[in-house]
Length: 122
Image 1 (cartoon, helix red, strand yellow):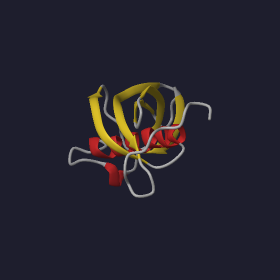
Image 2 (cartoon, helix red, strand yellow; image 1 turned 90 degrees about the horizontal axis):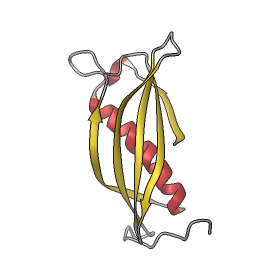
Image 3 (spheres, one colour; image 1 turned 90 degrees about the vertical axis):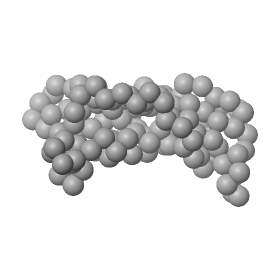
Image 4 (cartoon, helix red, strand yellow; image 1 turned 135 degrees about the vertical axis):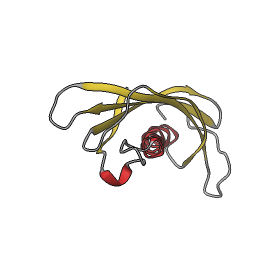
């Protein structure tokens, strides 16, 4: 998987229990998936589905969060991107996978309508 985003979990990103809010992590994953999708589509893409969001471990304030993505499949106008999120404690080299999911995107033209994806390598 290719690295897409690296960020630090901040206090403003927490839920009432003090852990990083799952919605914040999902948004970071969507950004990472969108980056991979836009590169492959060579243009604008929109998220249309998220599958299999599984939280394995919590993320804590101060953790470094790294997001990795790879293209799973490509159709005529859509593509699926697998994203994994990993955490690293602020003062440690220990890394743990915290969540993963598959994101489906559709490539859009300038009018916001689905458009065919370019051939790979073109």
